[in-house]
Image (cartoon, rainbow, N blue to C red; front, side):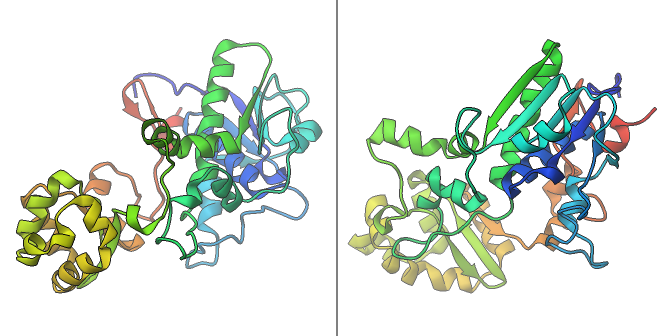
Length: 332
């Protein structure tokens, strides 16, 4: 590495374990995890009841929590005493444990001047409109996003604010609104309203992308209208050209059942690898839906060293043109 990690010598107080609500706790913990990746000494005190993530799914073979292992990697157990350069938590945790830290990152639902009501990641996705575009067409119920995209994204925003405050020096409280971050994740809705005057929804006539069963799993269809001739050539069924219900993109989305009747058997008869190779040969963007265990052998993930041999994900943390790992950030 060209030089010391950017937060080397800094002490960060992670109050995620004391946050009253789960989205806040996840966001604060992710922010602190990133700080550890940048070389900070991150201290994580826990309440008398113990680490809140210790029994959270997914569980590893030894019964411990993969979530706990990931979010708390590179952190040290300790107390909220002594000098800290920054502290991360919600209003209650910061007020009780971090009065002396010059930089504070405060996680809330709506912002500093609003109440902080009970909230889940599902509720945030609903308020921001994400649930209106995720899942099968109505009247099917919406689907929650897998993982913790909402809270983790808030953690990235919190880390950005923390880094900027440390760079500026002095005392500062940076407020991160979980709802604002979730709305930013859903920026295409705002863009859609500006361009078309209407927000995207899960309405059947507007659903263009979906997954299809393959011989050994599922494929995600994410191609554009310009790819249709090549897509049609790969499938090789004359009905894709002769059926008037499939003549245009709007017609195909409105008549998805008719489209699936034609292409469904072809997908079901081929493996994901066969489908991917055939479509890539024609430059049609489709993607296989992979199982988590398959990611360990994924060529792109391996090339980027995204997953360790034990399955621990790496974070996209870099400095001076080099990628930082926890080991490299804390070396020396």
